[in-house]
Length: 349
Image 1 (cartoon, rainbow, N blue to C red):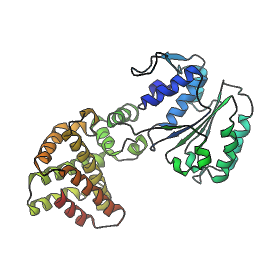
Image 2 (cartoon, rainbow, N blue to C red):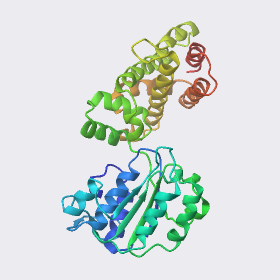
Image 3 (cartoon, helix red, strand yellow):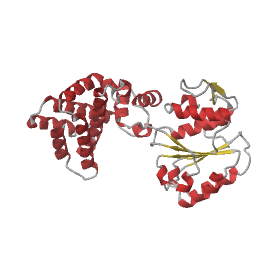
Image 4 (cartoon, helix red, strand yellow):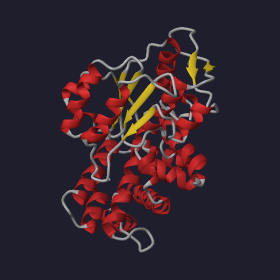
């Protein structure tokens, strides 16, 4: 996949493409950011841009500092196709083994190969995925090469937990910080590449915190029903101050048999959906750009909820959001009763 085809991270991708164009790409890089947002995808796309046989020029971003065009892979030459299929002899992937860690032996192997000139491409690209799982000995083995990398090699460390790396490793790798994908970007990926329908994709994207990896692990049907239940509970809470009537709405936070295996799992899903809805209510009340809404398909409901919260006491949305966070903590960390947590939360909203 060429850099221009990657979803999200446009400023970082522009930065990398310009570095390839100018031949100023650092020989060591750390791609850091949340799990499942496309860091590894960008690493392979960068490997294509570096080794493409017929590179193409992209126009720079509108806010670029200069008019220098950005170099990208064609995506169709022999080199690009072999990198796409993970068959290219000079694009080396090191990732955790069955034990969940990266031991020293595969690291030594790629270090030995990096001492020789590339045979198949212009530049050897070594991608260490989940680099935070490198054992101490493996990290120490990397240090000399990261400090004085071979002129014909680029090392890319990919990590969602860079703090687990040794300070000596971190100091040798310029860090590019990847952020979460937007809800709209996630929806587009789920529909285009993973066969989701629009409704299910939106339900999943609203609670995936910008991570495609997390979204793909979620059950879209359960999430859609969880969002419906969370929305009903919020609407009930803002409609009345009567404690008894509020407690009646707590049943929408408790599991039904077709939602999840247990009441606890269902409540966690619905609290996550409720937190996402309250975040959007806060955005609506702050007059933020509605393109940032995670639940954009529920915009009319969000507008009504926002108006109801705005008529209440000051700071009510923030307190409700905080209460949902406390409820999630009680369920996931302290093993509290789902019914007690649901009842308590409805009285706080």
